[in-house]
Length: 357
Length: 211
Image (tube, rainbow over all chains, first blue to last red; front, side, top):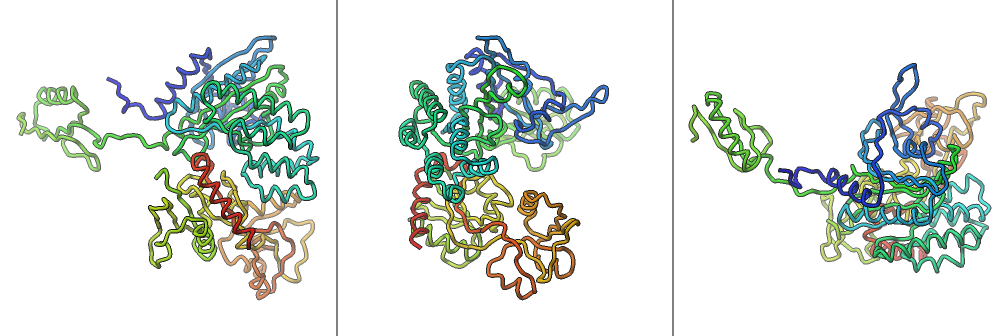
């Protein structure tokens, strides 16, 4: 009998997510534990952490214990016109000598706007599946890159501005924009922006470039779709989302669950990665950091075991077996000669010389 | 725990001043003003909970979600680079992060510069920007001693008035960054307590501007 109490939060989540992705036509992707280290070094900027565990494989080839799943999927993305590959995974990845359970999906190939909207929708639905209050913050890297470019910032300043946006730090952002009122107005509007589709109107006067307008249109369409599915209140425009400008090229998002101090889901459109690998395909995907669900309190059985059977070592085996079997039929049982330290039980049965007392 | 506002304050004068501002914002907690050894103070009516922590630990409490909000020096944020939102410059506890050395100090060109500091990350980033080869000596206190005893060429430390430096025949050579207290928020708490956090930020912002 498998009850909810046996599955830990994160295990239940993985099953729920797999079922969800499969329902939308995503197929499972199983990757090997090891991948050539070279793949990760070439795409170092794409990885969350550069602390990769390596081994020397056959023929002295340097192998890595997989720190990431996305790169392996993109490497094999289809290039044919009109073809899109939709895969999901739930795998352990390894970073900083830690094993991290991660689930997620990637949609790669000749993406249409529908594929992008569907992936974002699945991100919201993933959060919904995990239960409790949730929020998905949405931003657009293409938009941010275009604004920073128009501000005339060099690479160093762009990086600083992105840092300020990420931390919602308007005071340092203001100092950075000294003498450039146009940049300050646009970046300030982005930095304080937080809300639903109505915020797009507030932003429009400050975002004047062609690429910026295009990005706003994309966001508008996307928020429209999400609202139609009933998630208008669950998604927020928030431009603090977005790591380094690195690989993300379009919409980016990050999901939060109440009670978990960091984001549990993050992803976005990353066309630059396949392009860097010399492929024509485009890509969108996200990861759910399932292991963070351990942070959530789970209703726990106040007892470690239901029945503790203590015996003195002289009880015939057959009697012990019978007592243990009948107790196990009703709940959990532990047979011992001495009560274990630091554990609790609902009921204690002591057996001596073959008779219960 | 959920609909409470948890605020981590740095022990000391800065924390007391920050509490006064939060009190003005409508988050008073009378019990905090009683002397004693208690660490946590609650006002159930306002659903606010304050706790005093070591100043350098504030960012950890906030990053890990034990506190929704915190008051912390920019030096700590630069040193530990926590994933938090930095919502406001409170413009108090002002000082600067600077390079200081002996009055007769001459930069040892062509040699590795030995730098003593409590802030290895800030130091590393600062000199990396200059492509200067340095040797960081990580100390936990009395940094000023290092150049006097020849342990290091210079120090990277917080300078408030410069009195300690002057009394030890040291002087500031280069300013790295100005420092002041900041209001920080946990990234997830911000999502779910947005209205309250936004109101606190706006109230504090007004108080800072009126000063």
